[in-house]
Image (cartoon, rainbow, N blue to C red; front, side):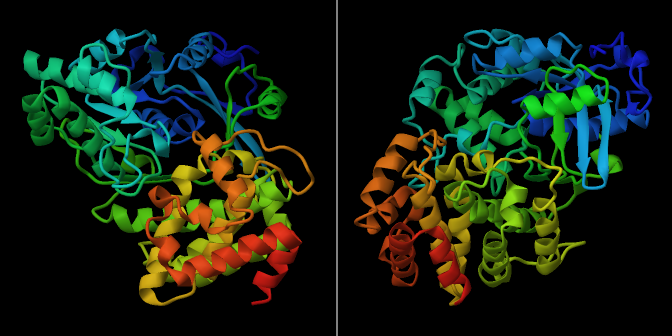
Length: 488
């Protein structure tokens, strides 16, 4: 059955469909970056509220800023912006159709339609999922990357911007000039202090062309920090076939695990939905939740994905089935990551490690090592290096984290141990590969990337084991290196 508003009543009864009248929904949120994660996570929480008869004036308008987003917009428009969510529980699968998105703004050069929609008084939140590396952060200073070509363009052409942030600023200018008032900017990407980072990007970019507008945004807009969590694989032929097995023809279905978490600062300048009634947590201690998740889950993904790719293991659950890779995960997590994580309400660090172990091991979730290993140039400095720095400061071991970094360097050579080629898997793949190939004979060449490692190249407690592990991986192979590390 082709998915649409008209066919909802005819779908198999095993599929949950919206009980609310979608024609009566009105928009309150523009969300930029309509990938699988948003539709399985933030959009789902709103869908649950609509099912409760709540917050029907907070529906989502989807948005994108890159030309390739237009293909996604057309697919979703053809099915009335409905999404089939398929929960992959080890005990079985279930499906539901969600309807919290009611439109997708056309994508045109200069983003005029997007700017006008965000300037609409009905829009009170603009949210984003644009990947960790998409916030124009200078890799060396961690400040705003004002010299990036996209930023230079937007500063010179504020009325016809190239970036999502430039479009948000243009919309905020209209709102200020029309006396409408601000909106909340809500970052939903895996970044520590993601609200602070979004604020830095918006205010810094605005200041390049209109300092008074930057001051207005800094004074009136809010940018709450948040922590988001749900494992959501990419959609391919297998996921399309799963949707069809339920009797539903959805061009862009989403599979996901049977776990979600969303922790948010309650700091919304123009109101918000009652997400807490759908299971989200409002907290003044987002940072503690964030550290636990980013260090243990996101860091854990980096612990196993690069070694898995080098060994030719295709999925994360496959990595956890491999005795040596799972043992690597457990040892690094418990000895080198967990000691620097504080407990949060509902979880101690050791209990959270056990939870992540179970989630990664879920064989129903076909999450590829390639997807998880993507963008290591953002993920390693964000998810691994902070644990190294904490370990050095506390005098605890960092040998395993050095091993993980060596695995990343080996992966970036572009050849797996079975001789197969690794296709480019990072925005800076060519630079990383050149550095990785040079590090085969001089391992410290890898650590010389100071925008990623800072001064760790000069820290013998990390640099010396890194050199030892990378040399061993190249000379004796990944399995031999794993055996040596696990043997202590």
